[in-house]
Image (cartoon, rainbow, N blue to C red):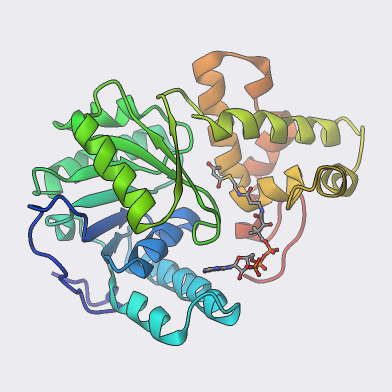
Length: 307
Ligand code: CAA
């Protein structure tokens, strides 16, 4: 079952049945910034986690990102070496969706591209055999209904939206579609609050949900301000850090989120509401086309050393 090229630890079967309605076996699709963070917090919470990626190389990159984050946690005294090793032993990587058959919860965390996410949900619907399994998306902006109706079980599809860095930020947005069942919502809420110790806020199924509907126009305004020559990137960011006590300014934050993700969320918001404030500024579009995606590529509004 395990892809040898990708396996980094032994699978630990904590509980073979879903009878007691708990979630012991988790799947995560995508091991980028968000997927690796979600896998990390689930494994640290004692869950058996299988991560699906597209290739052995992508599995290895995800594994390295995850180990790097766990090591940062150890260095900063947030967890000890034993807890790090135990979390790693609960994590496996694979390229085969069939390995998710017995998962009780799967969180999709692939890039913010609607056709790709719909395809992932079709694959999950075919692969996950637990009839009560929750199929969740970490989407920042794509309506959950569109993902739900790609499956035969839209009542079990829900948005569980984490924030970057996932091991550090407490918030989770829980997003229910018109078809999500109350049972799915309560199980997902219980998992996020009692197992992951996250603070859950609930949103209806509108593009951007709560946080991105507020955050993205703010970031786009900062980009327009810089693009027009009104102020420098440093001064815009310093304004919000020093003047409003934000942990980082909007351009640094765009680099952290990834400029491709920032633009994809803006596009979803614009498609839904047709408001000019959600339209991607030309500078953002050009930077994404140029591959200047922020921290993950080493250059966005700022330059970053090797990651
Ligand atoms: N496990 C546990 N703790 C960890 C950790 C890990 N794997 N990695 C880091 N930490 C802890 C560190 O120990 C440190 O804790 P203390 O403050 O108690 O010392 C803390 O996390 C911060 O880490 P750093 O010292 O490395 O970094 P920093 O102080 O420069 O803060 C930051 C970095 C957390 C990113 C901070 O700048 C911040 O919160 N920025 C805003 C981030 C934000 O707004 N994110 C949301 C983006 S929107 C999104 O994600 C969703 C979307 O839909 C687009």
